Amino acid sequence: MILIPKKIMTEHDPISMLPLYDRYARGFFREHESGDRSRTLPMDIIENDKDYLILANLPGFEKKDVTISTRKDHLIIEAKPDNQPVDDKTKVHYSERFNGSYARAVHLPETIDRENIKASMNDGVLMITIPKNVQPNKEIVVE
Image (tube, rainbow, N blue to C red):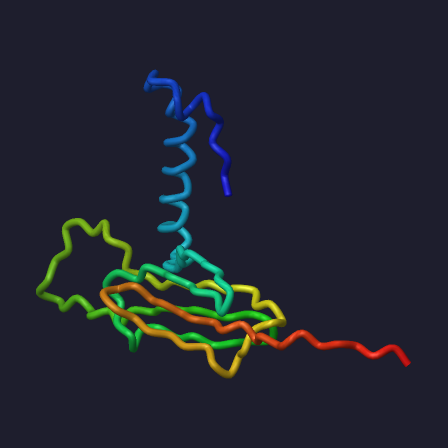
């Protein structure tokens, strides 16, 4: 995460925004130059007494484009669109919308119920429910 100094955010002088713009522009062009068409999937993780809830926005993606798996102590979420190739007669003049893939790994605590993880997707929002493995309090007998 890049921390932005408060001076840049509160000052109205356009010159003070140049370092912020520079950082943004360098990252934008670097992504295109490298050919890397993947981004980190933005998400919210919410916890309550019974489970963890992951909400991730995937606009333009369909359920078939999303893969969720567990590997060791991580939940892996990948979204790869089924891009329609542009034919020879079509000419794209300008394309600004992101059309690459998303990927994210989330560390899973030991206290979850891996067998009952559920996922659904509606209107481009992926929702993953990870139940906690609630064990009743156990009394330990001293021998």
